[in-house]
Amino acid sequence: MNRKITTLLSILIAGSSLLMIDCSGNGSKKADDMSIPDSIFENKPLLISKEAMNDIIDNISSPVEMAALIKSAGAPFNQKYLAQTNRVDNLNTNFKQALNLGVYGCDLGYLNMYEKTGSIMVSMTAIKKLADELRIGQFFDFNTIKRLATNNENLDSLMYISVASFNNMDEFLRESNRSNISALLVTGMWIEGMYLACQVVKENPERTVIERIGDSKMVLNSLILILRNYKSDPAFANLVKEIEKIKKEYEAVSVRYEAGEPEAKEVDGMLIIIQNDKQIVDISDETLANITVAIENARNMIINL
Amino acid sequence: MKKLVSIISVILLSLSFYHASAQSDDLVNVCALGIGNATYLKDFKVKLPASVANAPSTKFNVILNKGTLYKFTVCNAEGYEGKAVIKLTEGPNVLGTNLKPDGSFQDAVGFQCNKTGMYILTCGFKGGKEGAAVVIMSYMNK
Image 1 (tube, rainbow over the protein chains, first blue to last red):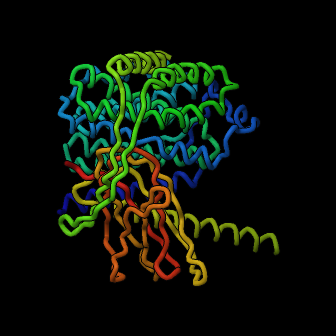
Image 2 (spheres, chains in turn cyan, yellow):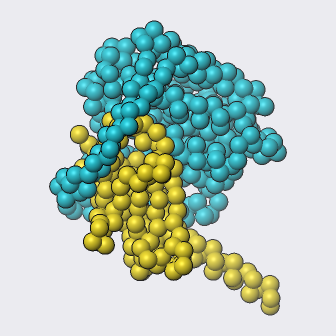
Image 3 (tube, one colour):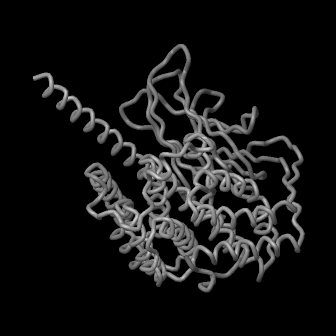
């Protein structure tokens, strides 16, 4: 109980200090000379409204959900799925940093899910470095995460702080007119989440994971919509080209629905609504294999930037 | 003199904004750590003024995934009379709410999603009273 209160207090104090840092000008780090100036994007009209774009970015599913699905499908933890963190120093533009930050953020969710606290610290060091380069490092309470991870202490709080840190970084980027960076961050996360799912399915063709890969078609379409906004930049154009290859493979996936009446039941005092609609994802082995290759190519492009 | 008043006003406004923002972040932390056997995914902050004629509400689009049991936990901020009413809808269909038929509230509502898609989470305050609240979206651990 005392431990929980201490953790809660740490989070409250850390949260308040983060806000103060935020109010005082986003830290002291100088902007990277190799950064993409935001003005490049701001001066060009967006294809979709800023509100619509924020809405889409907000709704790219959390990588934690994919990691939870993988774990609940019974797949064992596999370190070899994860991206190497030893090349962060080579990532010298905001474009490369934001995409890879998304990749590492997703890997962090996977590590958290399997409670691999030792590897979390290695991942966190890379994440902190990239977040600092992007001037959003103030949203990472590195010391609390380090303490929770190294002491194997309160892993629920560790998961919460990790996820909330990414949510806060993303929110800050969009509020400060850096939606281009936010779009890259969620793209990196999404690609890595899909990569993990595809690797798991290769070794253990679990139906629930295959269905999730199939029904990600909707999110993929939204992702392309936001990335196309910045297509005038050659780096974005290349990324869009790679992701459109994934979209092409998804054309063979179809999703059907059968309507049903929802029902309510009370479990341990909580009302639970059960949706009785049915969703049927039609995805052949060949299509799944083609999607896997397209995802691997996009992911390899990002981690070799 | 006028300039000084303006500067002081801006400082006071900034401080009150900072205070409100810090308060809502603290509420998120407290609420997120009280979700029980569930894992935090995201939070929604809502603050609405009183309005008797047309009770205001805020809508959030959320993508929910098939096979996941979601939990929406509501925490009301202290110092406000309004109690948050949340509603989860899909198109025109209301799937669930935390407001019981007898007018009392559930602290949390679960939703077993069997269809990946866009849903709408609406949050307002009962009777159009002024209120501030946080809704934590999480998934229930199996």
